[in-house]
Amino acid sequence: MIKNNNGYFGEFGGSYVPEPLKEVLKEVEEKFYQFINDPEFLKELAYYQKQYIGRENPLYFAERLTQKIGGAKIYLKREDLNHTGAHKINNAIGQALLAKKMGKKRIIAETGAGQHGVATATVCALFGMDCTIYMGEIDIKRQALNVFKMELLGAKVVPVTRGTATLKDAVDAALEDFVENAHNTFYLLGSAVGPHPYPSMVREFQSIIGKEARKQILDLEGKLPDYIIAAVGGGSNAIGLFHPFVDDKDVKIIGVEPAGKGLDTPDHAASIVKGSVGIIHGFKCYTLQDEKGEPLPVHSVAAGLDYPGVGPEHSYYKSIGRADYVGITDKEALDTFFELSKIEGIIPAIESAHAVAYGIKLAKDLEKDKIIIINLSGRGDKDITQVKEML
Image 1 (cartoon, one colour):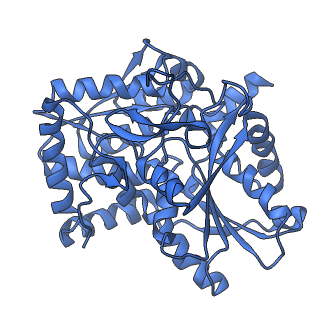
Image 2: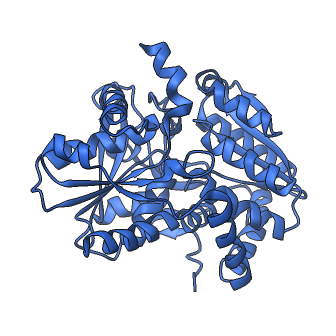
């Protein structure tokens, strides 16, 4: 049985929101814990995971990459093979089913890289729900293909022009809509961030990644991995991989944050590595903030990592030393984008390339009997135009 943690992971998490939003979130919280422990709900969720998303997806031994590096064995958890091309659909299906059970007819969401927006628009088409997606104006420009996909699927994409016009501002706009229209609207939040119950809810729907990977590596190798690695922006794909391994103390956990143009510059989005404890979007976490506690502008070549905070469960893992968090620069991620494409025939999302880049660095210094699992959280179709223009 999945128990309610009341929104806290150590000191992190919580629900620092106005009273009107607290009332709305209380309903979501009650219904989530009711249905996540309901065998009929879980049976329906499992049906869509298999028949619609296409799970389980492979844990693929990247043999040529491993041979080139000459170190540890590298396995890729192939979330890029899911319907819509990323891990985001795992959570979107789960929350949409919950919204359906709650009788909500309208779905809103925020998106950065556009993958969550596409996943949300997809499940709204599947279940016949009205869909509105908030997206920063800058992200709309660099992810034009995903914007067209969302509109093709029947969603209304609303440009957000205030602030930095990226993911943080899209979340702000979506939360405002949610408070105003809670009577008929469900906010389908895409990452393991925000006020309670969203971090726990997203974690539960994404934990299928780690549950599958854990079983698959035992079947393939007869033992658990030495390292598991995933890119961390808000943190949903990473927490989905990490959580099922948390009690396996011999498995080292590494989250890879966007170091942008360098951790010694202001142009990065490494919230854990360079941030401090603060409150953003209604929850406490490590965040990049100024002296007044206001979020700082952030940068990453990957739109999906362009966020000045990080999920509270990641913040907790960092604080107790259960996971390590590191940075990978734009250049390192882009170099890996090309390398994985040419060596394995897999074009990764730029977000995922951050994780692969660090995995390659790590593998070089390890013995050949060591095993690394890297979450390949999405495919790079959405990034082709952006990378081409950069070239």
